[in-house]
Image 1: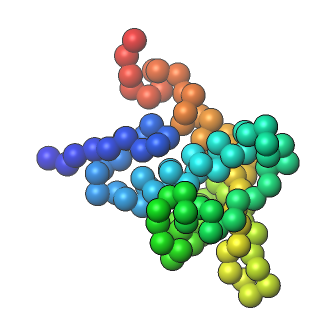
Image 2: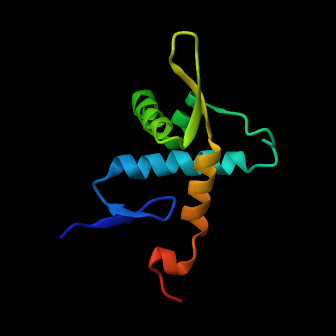
Length: 112
């Protein structure tokens, strides 16, 4: 019988689906930063800061950012060599996260 974990966005995923858990961590972090009154322009967050905040390695963060960009949940800033330098939540990502965090109880399968 598989075990499930709740991601930072409140999604239930198999406990061995670390990629979803880690991706939700990054997306929720970017969502929080995008809503901060100290970041009114939704400035991108440096990859090094995401590495530090998540405790993941640079390669893991770059892989997750690439996946999230492909899903159009984030926008990335690249250096002249094409490496990921920073990321911010896209408008589509903000809508998706808002739905995940603030969906009605009926949609999440919760009761009362």
